[in-house]
Length: 152
Image 1 (cartoon, rainbow, N blue to C red):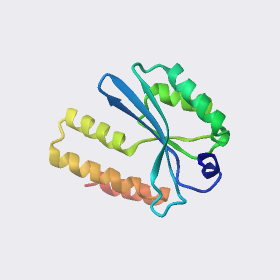
Image 2 (cartoon, rainbow, N blue to C red):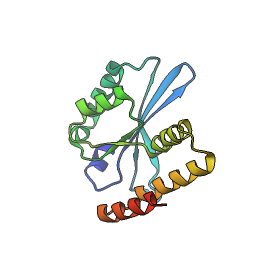
Image 3 (cartoon, one colour):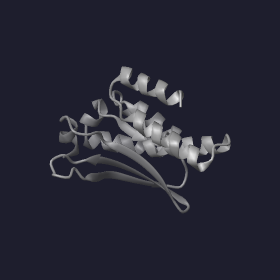
Image 4 (cartoon, rainbow, N blue to C red):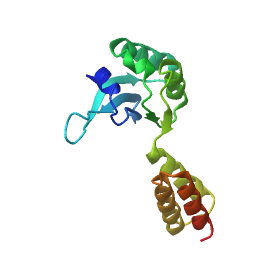
């Protein structure tokens, strides 16, 4: 089913990694567009205690074996930019663009702004501006909005 969905113009599969106590839980998910609400469906799980690329390599070998279309998919993969996951994606999903999860981008921006002296009100404005910019589909419109925001 997943392999068939990769051949459509469906929303992209998503890749996430979470820490659970003394273990990490890696979940590869996809949106199932044949359902009205396009629910997120887990495709596979990996529970591991160390961030070794070999563990992720093994998982992706199995995924690609069961879903050959995954190897050549051009659907973007969204991650938290954990280096072993990024390396695994590059070596197994040859044509999949890699995107960074917005939640992690905003979290990192909050942390950076805070460490550089921004107060909570300023941080809220910067994050709001970032979200607005991320939703602009045309490069020239993005540049105009960015320049307007920089002049505030």
